[in-house]
Amino acid sequence: GLDFTIVSPKEFFPDSEILSICTPIAKKNNANITISDKISLVKGADSIYTDVWISMGEEALSTEKKALLQSYQVNKELMALTGKKDSVFMHCLPAVKGEEVTQDIIEGSQSRVWDQAENRKHTIKAILLATL
Image (tube, rainbow, N blue to C red; front, top):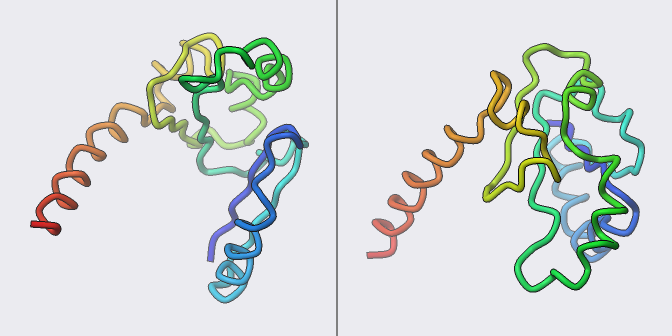
């Protein structure tokens, strides 16, 4: 199994219905799911993954969401908290540099964002082929 940790403000924790589905699957596969608002739990992480803070249609919530998420920005300090020089950064794109991630991280050596985007293209092609 693997260890999967979500670190976010409590306001953005996954819905309990989703957790009630995922938790038994994780247990069956010797995996652990941890959910916390404590940033220190990134220690030991192989990968840090984030998403855009403000999705299309949520612009009215922009100020409130940014205030809640600012201390969770992926930056040098957060990546250093993993305690691992080989931890990688991932993002599903599009990213807003300076909000959820700093430019030095998304453009840096730990970033796998561009490989991730390229691999998505091949995954989509495979799905299209499978549905023909």
